[in-house]
Length: 237
Image 1 (cartoon, rainbow, N blue to C red):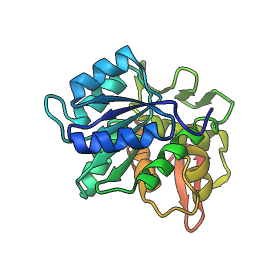
Image 2 (image 1 turned 60 degrees about the vertical axis):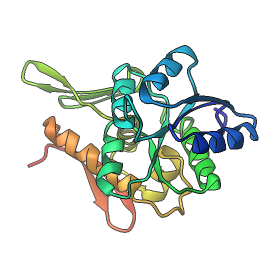
Image 3 (image 1 turned 45 degrees about the vertical axis):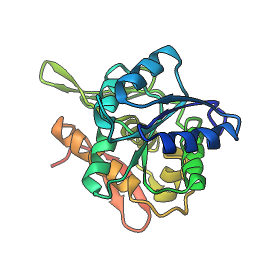
């Protein structure tokens, strides 16, 4: 897959920012579709699907969080980078929870935004080839992009975001091995491995919580201090 998208949807109600982004992307030969609110953005996604979405959070009619929720409920996994004026970590966590791939806080550097875009596009070609993983009552199907756990006679689907799913898929493929923070940043999140970011920590935390909430107890994701993470099989006690 190309390191750059050919078509981006910019969802932003501030016309000056939308115009700035459009001019910048078009100067890099990227087609730009613009939407000023979440409802218009959903229509744009349906009519002219983009390869990546730049999404403001505070908008009329349908805000960014609600847009993300509706988008992911349809099974659409288009990468999304949130734009927000909020510096509160809880807003960033909420954005990742509803399925955003990354976030950048206003004001931002266009060069940084471009680096984030390239990172997200790179990671699309870095995932493991094995598609089915079964550990006890837990199952992950990378083709259907489902993670499930059997609870008695019920099969419960675990509501993972795109990035959480990709992290779990990668760790399952390397089960028992220590996977470095740098490798996860580069191969799964698509970041420069030297970048300083807490995004990976937030994704791992959300992933662990969702596994626990759905009673997945036959493996655990352990932190290896100063190195990275290891997925260990074995019923938790």
